[in-house]
Length: 194
Image (cartoon, rainbow, N blue to C red):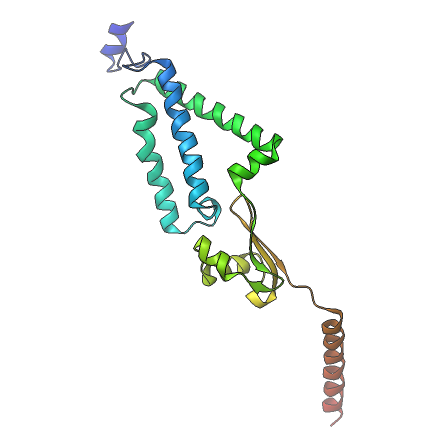
C-alpha cells in the first residue's frame, strides 16, 4: 500500500507519529491551552468580544505562534488529531467545571466590570481596561442608545461583551415631558387660529 500511495505522491507515513510519544502529544496542547487561558485572563476580557483591529491581529498571530509548541516536530495526521482531541477534551472539561463551580467560573472568567453606574462613567475602570470613551460610545450606539448621558448602566460582562441599559426617566421628567407636549399643542392651536 505504501508503494501505491508513494506512486500518487502521498507520503505513506502520514499517519505515523514522528519523534513524539502520544503522552507528549497530549501534554503539549494541554499546557498551551492552560497558558492561553491564563494569558487571556490577565490580558482582559476586552480581547474576547470588543476587538479592535490590533486585538484581532494579536489573536490571529497567537494561534500561529503556539502552533509549533502544540505539534512539535510531528506533522503527521495522527499527531494533529491527538492534539485536536486533547484541546477539545480539555476545553469541555474546563467548561463543565466553570458551569458546576462558581469559584472556578470566577477564577477563569472573572467578574463583570461596571463601565457606567447610575449614569456616571467609571473612568477608572475604562482606564484599567483600556477602553476609550469613543469606543464606549460606539458600543452604546450599536445597542440603540444615542448618547452616553442616556445610559443608566454599561457593564463589561465576563464573556467580553458590553451590556448597556438606557436610563429610565423619573416620574418628574415624565410629568414635565407631558406638560411640554400639551404646551406645544396649545401653542400650535393658537398659531393656527391667528
